[in-house]
Length: 552
Image (tube, rainbow, N blue to C red; front, side, top):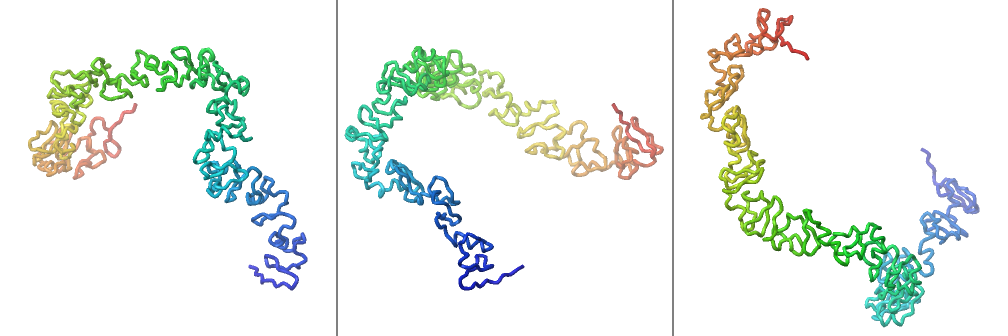
């Protein structure tokens, strides 16, 4: 690593910024880089003679580039507000962040980021650009804000009638409404949208009889409206409604329109049956239009809503006017519904005699012994309740008498099934008293002393467990008390089984000489050369027997 000692310069010279050499004073800022790092010609050393230095000191730019609308400095300082100020007709925010229109200062809405255009100190003094003082003296506002139709003064004095009738409109809003109360920009006059309180800005007489700006004259010759509003289906813009007359709208065949019932008006199809009346005759929200005969809908009496017929007379106000719960004694319940005894309520047929009171008069749970359950439902054993067929033997008690989960019903006599005491399912009888809890409540292992083992099973000596007969004397303890492997020398093996040489164990005859020891004494794999293989087995070269498997 090279180390450089600090350079010492003679009088009349100075070190470069990198401290590697000295240059004479005459070489500074002469246009030639005499320092390796160019520091003798840098802005820090020489400044910007005849040019403008950017605020960050990184560049010099020509004076003509300052405030020309295009940033030439890296930091943009040549176009900053504090550098250039604001053009005529604009006002500089106190924080120098931006310029806003003179007419926006003290206009009642903050435009500067720092809010300085609405400060009391800004607005309380009148200026050449804000010469009009509010009646309460609280602020001075721009002439264009006086009589423009919007309150700018806190006391509203800039829009008072006595103010505006004597006011001469400014060039920002030179057109005065006929009533003398509002001044408008020319752009708002004859644009098809009324801005004056008296609507004089859209009178045909002021708009060359509606022949300018794509205007359309109403039939009563009182207003001009925009052609885009004619036959748009969204309400009448003309007083006489002529902009939505069928004869002016190709008989309502354009713009996805719908003809009102009286034939005198078009409205948008999207507004038909939307809950708001748009046709003068109300036909777009009538029951005949919105709930045609034969549908499953019912129209509320106020014609504002359709509801499902099954919601009529259900003791709930579904209509805003509650008309769906009136005169219910005369209402015929819909299919799969039936009247309560008081005749005032319709409930689903399946709710009758279901064990839960639904009718207000409780008649749905009365005289159930004589009630015939609906299709797909069945009576509980006490005949007082109907439940769905799907709820029978589903491990949940639906009947109050629990008969839907009874052993008699769910595990019929003579079947191989056994019902757990808590009704939580049936199990195969061979699992009862097998020493393993198969029921959630362990009821299959209770009172086993009284249980008779089914065919093919044997009771252990403790009288508490049943095991398969084929598990007796098989060389494995299956009884908890090991009684299945006792006294085996006196036990006769079942058919197709044989005794091992020690006379204490039974194995399948097919297990003899199969190359796998099954007898504890190993006798099943001895003298195999003299053993005759069982039918379906083949003798191998080592004298073992293997099963012959057929291939397709």
